[in-house]
Length: 218
Length: 218
DNA sequence: GTCAACGATTTTGTATACAATACAGATCGT
DNA sequence: ACGATCTGTATTGTATACAAAATCGTTGAC
Image (cartoon, rainbow over all chains, first blue to last red; front, side, top):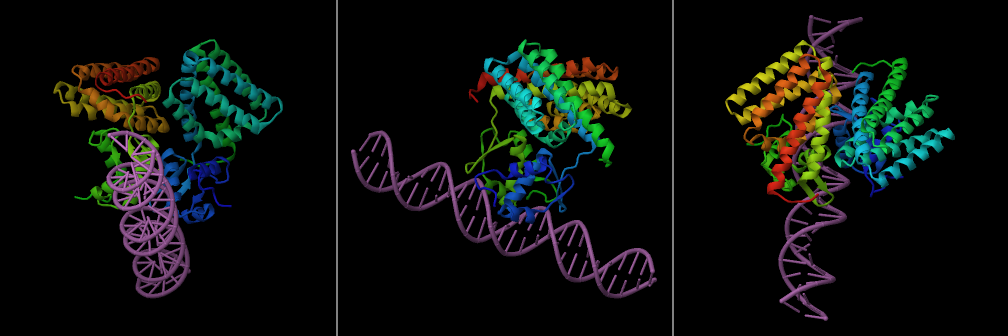
């Protein structure tokens, strides 16, 4: 029942947020969380602090922590930045990827294709994650890879919803093909451009999605 | 004597690191810091945790916190990313900056010029900070501005040393002129390119500097 | 003399106790 | 009856106490 000791508390909370178990704007009561995870408030506070630093939750002094709610405009800003970062990863990957990088990329894309053909949304989600992570790695810039991974995490909750849109899954797959080809032939600018577009489209799609159902200004 | 209550502890530590008061690799003893700031270990731990999340210090489980020492290769990676981010800021600033943005930019550059002519390294350092921050703001992407500011902080310690190199100060000023002009005339690609180069040069200069005096592999 | 294992000490990690601040409801005044 | 202030309660922020782990020194064996 209790969260296993050896594991990191932050990840658990992060996951709960990504999974939508903790909705945006929801209050994160320290005592409640402490009880739920079977620990004292101290490690909870530490986890919340880390999540606040990475921007996933917001801590208002003396007023508690809430799951950060990013308005549509801020979300667009985040996707804009993510697109640039991924584009950079792609550009560097095209220039620097070695054999093992390309193998990993191709394998991930193969998984994506399999999931897409089976209409397995969850499967595609994870394969897609591996594909993008493989690109981060292939950039041969460890720091960049870390940053990209971090951003990926932050956008996780929003990306996920967006995949369920009908047709998006196969479009995404086709885009991956183009990106993979560009990296394989070492075409840095094409890889960068295609990846940027790949991300920006997601942002725009999500923007549409959000604009339809919710309204909250930053 | 004691650190003022109303102010944030994290900033104080951050500053000490940036100023070189706490050298890279140095151990950060919680008890000592607590005594020094006149608080208990708890807020110290919170501050260290935040700094660890942003990458300024490294916390090894049960082995304490040390000022993160970034080897030359990692530093280059960081500058590579910073260059891209600043380039993005410049590109967007050229497209989106309004009157007040341009005014702030021009004012900051004026301060830079004054400091450069007076050979005031510290003064230039701060004016330079304002200049770059003004560009971040002008990008009209709040999230991007935050990320850029964060990266700027992380590179602070290294940037600072590097400014003392003779001649670099005036070269930097000249580069600012070009960047400012590009933004003012709305030339997005030029602004991006110039800013990227402006940052990359700093990274390379620092690489030279480090290679001469220190040796530690990642 | 060197190396390994054990124990004492120091230091981190967690829990609890306490203080301060913010929120809510009730009371009092107008 | 409405509004403002005050008091009670709940929750965050900080300090201290305790537990677990790592480091360092010592001792003993080879």
